Length: 91
Image 1 (cartoon, helix red, strand yellow):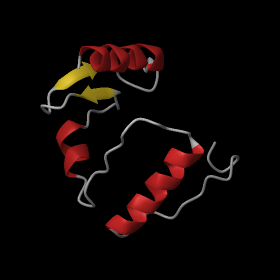
Image 2: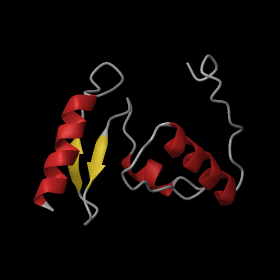
Image 3: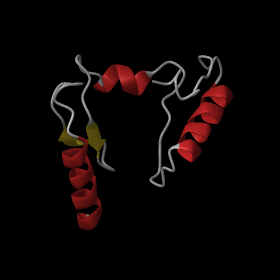
């Protein structure tokens, strides 16, 4: 899909390049919520990854506030969005 939509970026080799790619994606996708970037060593990815992938919401204390079903077939973006909204409403 990225090729068809001409969303093509080389794999970032530095933290600065990673920030540039993430910023471009946020602008293109019109994302307004705060985003965090993993270090170049992918420490957070390693700590939280699950195979198959899942959608997570991590609260301010670093706890898992929402964990979706295994993806991609059990991804439920609507449920994930509701969890984010409910979490923010309670914050």
